[in-house]
Length: 412
Ligand SMILES: Cc1cc2nc3c(=O)[nH]c(=O)nc-3n(C[C@H](O)[C@H](O)[C@H](O)COP(=O)(O)OP(=O)(O)OC[C@H]3O[C@@H](n4cnc5c(N)ncnc54)[C@H](O)[C@@H]3O)c2cc1C
Image (cartoon, rainbow, N blue to C red; front, side, top):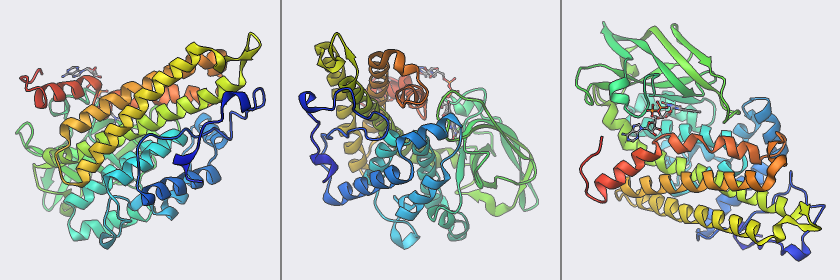
């Protein structure tokens, strides 16, 4: 049965007291209409995750802070790594809509892998849009086959939002080579990736003095150190030191000194993709909480019979479904080649806010059980924090909407 046709079990017929909350969470019907092909993609992905990494395994790996290599291989097998890249370039076809569908499912079922895929889609898009044929053959093709992994290295310790002021990493010419020095912070996957896409200063102009480089993750002078973090436990987060790292001239990706505009061009996509993960987290939180409310009893009835519990979850669900409609519309516009800067900022803000609310309501309804680290609600509650401030924090999303939609002067 197609997942969109599922109907929640009415409370009166639910297995009150015996409903399984760990392996068989009921999927709620989604409000947006997808094409048949898009539904098939979603169903195939959900089936693969349920087979390879059911929720109990996802939780085990999260508690053990371990990357899910089996799920990564299954995604590669399904062709997920190539979504967004045309088949004639070695990809699987599809575009922004297919990417957000994948990321919503992963956000809901295996959030750390969703974050991995946000980085992966960013890296493949940057390589496709800026790489030479030789760079695409060397770096993009193995990424699309799932044989390698990439990290995107922009943020530095002194600031992610105002990165143009914070950026201290520099690349200087040495004959035909480049020598890179600097430090990056909060870099996803840097300990386990094969290649790093590094932004470094190559000129003095504030925004037109940065360039992108492809750096082998195990090049001499590269040191990735895992940071102990409170969330996204199945995907390493790192500080990254680049000490006299020598790369050949053809490591320059795109145009010299034009790296920042090139990255900005992909950020609307990253914003939509982050929003889709947030929707998945929020929806996942609503689903497991609904199941729990069916099962848990107080005052001789399931807590899901209390109207305030029903209303809290209904309001949380409205927020997440509204945000999802916005994410999908932004992705459709992106696929149609239309500008999405305002809509993707709206989608990102709405989905992050709605998802944080869903996880919060979930923790409230789980109460003491919310602290059980074998149950997923606490993971949603922790993981949802990432996309409230990354890749664009909520205030910056509002700044962009105020400036580009309302027409106010820039506030920062
Ligand atoms: C788990 C994790 C994974 C990450 N992965 C990567 C990665 O792979 N690659 C990478 O490059 N980076 C990565 N990051 C970094 C992430 O993108 C940054 O944390 C983010 O951009 C915010 O930067 P910051 O933390 O330095 O916050 P700051 O820039 O210090 O901002 C702090 C707060 O100040 C406020 N603020 C700042 N400017 C304004 C303004 N103009 N108006 C109003 N309010 C403002 C906002 O509330 C903001 O949240 C990751 C971070 C984490 C935690």
